[in-house]
Length: 324
Ligand SMILES: [Mn+2]
Image 1 (cartoon, rainbow, N blue to C red):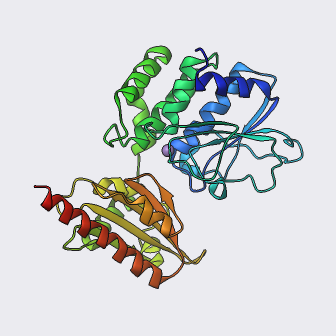
Image 2 (cartoon, helix red, strand yellow):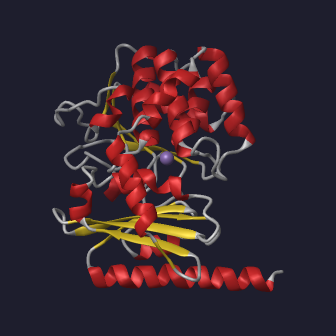
C-alpha cells in the first residue's frame, strides 16, 4: 500500500485510542452506512480502541446498525473522523466535543473542513466506495455486515450505478467487495427500496402537481399540510427526488418542502445538465454539481431561488442550441 492516502488514513486511525466518527445532518444511507461500517471495522481490527459513530439516529435506517451516544468528557482529545460532509457547520453531534484533530474522508467538493489527513475524492460515487477501498487496501478488517453496509451505501449514492459519478473504479471496488465478503447482495435491496403505500401515493401527488417551466425547470413547493395529509415526513420529498429523473421536458428539478417547525424551506435539487451547486450555495446550501440541497428562510427567497434556477436552465438551453 506504499504511501497511499489509504495508508495515511490507516496510520492515523492506528495512532489514536479514542475515535469519534461523525457525518452530516439529515443523513442518507451513504452517510449512515459509511460511519457504521468504519466504526465496526475499527472495532473488529482494534478491539482495545474506543470508537463510536455519532449523530441523530433515523429509525428507518436502523438496519445498518445502532449509532452511539457519547459522554463528551470521555472522548476529550479524540480523533474526529468526518465522513461524507465538507462543512463543519453541517457535521451532526460534535457541538461539545473537544477533539484533537480531524481526519476527513469525503466525495463532496472541498469546503471549510481541512483534515490533518484529508482524503477528498470528488470522482468517487460515494463515501462508502472510499471506505470500501480503505478496507480492501489496509489491514482494516471486514465482515459480512460491514461489506453489506458499504454495498448499500454505494448503490444508494450512485442511484443503482446510474449517476455519472459511477466509474470503472466503482465496479472494481464492488467486485472486490462481493468477492471478498460473499455478501448476498440481491437480498439486501429490500433495506433500500422497501416503502409504504403512503409514500407511493405521495409520489403521485408530486407527479400531479410539479410545475414545469418552458426552460425545463420542474419545481414544486410542498406545504407542510400536504406532508401531514399524506402521512409522510419532511425527508420524503428528498428521498423521492431521484425518481423524477429521465423526464424529457425536465432538465433541472427541485422540491421545496415547508418546515414550519424550524421556519425554513428544505430544498433538494437535481440536474441533467446545468451545474446547480453554485445556486444552492447562494441559498445556504451546497453539494454536488448535479445533486444539491439548500435551506431557505423565506417565501420571497424561495421565489428568487426558483427564478435563479430557471435562468440557469434558460442559459443552458440557449448554449446547447448554439452548439448544434
Ligand atoms: Mn455521499
